[in-house]
Length: 154
Image (cartoon, rainbow, N blue to C red; front, side, top):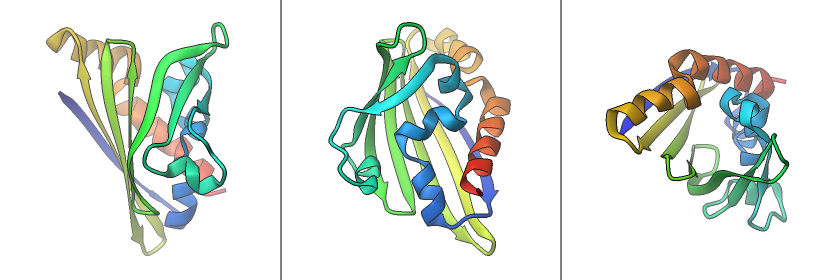
């Protein structure tokens, strides 16, 4: 299992940052998903905005190539309002990924800690491929968090 972790300070309340974590907003700020997905659509019932961030909420990535459901299947596994949201996703049989977003109030807003735990098929080769092809490593995560910050601060 591999892990990547980065934090960023955002000049917005935890409530505002929380809203931006919704799965259907991933393609707004996550470069890896922007490259591969047209959108992320909920497969669970969403009656209120709060439903988007509750435990058990599920969504599928819609492929840019053919407009059909892609191999990205998301499920929220942990949710503490304005504090922590964890979701997992897989793409095919190649990788299983868990993403945790931890929010801490700070003097001028919110500190967001973004943690990716991933398990790849093919051992060390799979880990290397994941970093190169899917997540793009630390630099891509830093760019993603900067885009997230810009959106949350609007």
